[in-house]
Image (cartoon, rainbow, N blue to C red):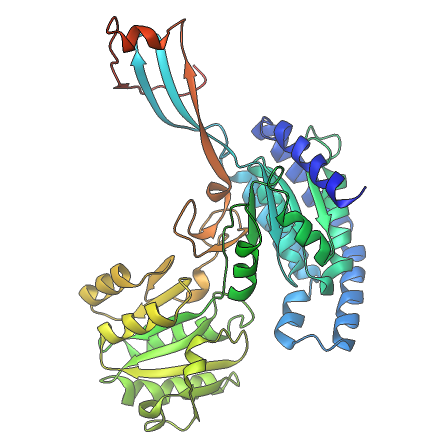
Amino acid sequence: MNMHEAVQTVKKASIRLAAAGAEVKNAALMAIADALLARENDIVKANLADLERSEKEGLAAPLMKRLRFDSAKIRDVVAGIESLMALPDPVGRTQAATELDEGLALYRVSCPIGVIGIIFESRPDALVQISTLCLKSGNGVLLKGGSEARETNRILADIIAGATINTGVPDGWLALLETRDDVNAMLAMDEYIDLIVPRGSNEFVRYIMDHSNIPVLGHADGICHAYVDAGADIDMAVRVVVDSKVQYVAVCNALETLLVHREIAPAFLPAAKEALERHHVELRGCERTRAIVDCAPATEEDWKTEYLDYVLSIKVVDGLEEAVDHINAYGSGHTDVIITANERAAMEFMDLVDSGDVFWNCSTRFSDGFRYGLGAEVGISTNKIHARGPVGLEGLVIYKYKLVGSGQTVADYAEGRKKFTHRRLDRGFPL
């Protein structure tokens, strides 16, 4: 089956999948979880082949870390599937109900988006999370992973598609794309594809937007900040900053730039430096930072960089206003944190920082669909329409209006024989 045929098959399957009930979808998810555990050795073997090849090809260390898909990660994604099964079905919910007139009722009901194309790099666990989220939300899915993970992606896609056969889910709801030519072809298929979710750099997301008429849910760089305010508890601030930076450096919600109020900097920076250097983090600081602790100089480019590595840029600021201005100028709208005991400062920060996720006194690493209870995520959106922040089930459905009448015609209302009541109803659809 060529790429165009595969996309058409997914489109056809998505129409039937949209009408699948929660029991059918959950049975399919259970079958996927069981199949992943049963094929664990085969998956690990395929992943080792990807790791060995990628190491020879000189794949960067952060990407190598993302690429690894061992037994522990298999169990993690299975736990995610089980969590997903426990969530309510996002499809078929009545969001609003209005009586237009007696015997004429309008319902706004959630429904799947349709066919979603996801382009991602390195992380095989993303393939499992994305495909199962799409299944639960009733969407067909096209998956394009990085070539570095091709063996792992192939076996995972085969296992997932095979496990859902005979569960009531329509065959062909999932397809794996493998080449760059497939991506370019996909961008032109707005007749069949309803949404594209690219996971990568700003430049990559911009390329996708500029070369397609399909709506794009942009997941760009994760240039995340933590601002340590004058009113911060130093021990707490060190703990939160270290976790934000080193708990897993090769992800989009890891801390990249640390902003520190000038009043707390002399006490905080030495403690932070000691803690971060225990994890072999390279520090790059502004002039005021370097006057307090010894570190490499930070350049303008550092404020714009997503390191995905054990590197952290630091800037001492005069106060909250400068911190907010810096974040809004250099951040990617992903996740930004204030650490302070001052509630008023925290509220101001959370109101003024223009990001999808704004936190107070906790790690940037909490910015995650699974941790939010969304059933994992297809990505974190920095868009301001449809969905923002971690995109889980709720971000993969839209809605349609369903109008139920009893022979009404517009002429009666246009010519004054009848009038609209527009009364809110407390019943859902179906009746």
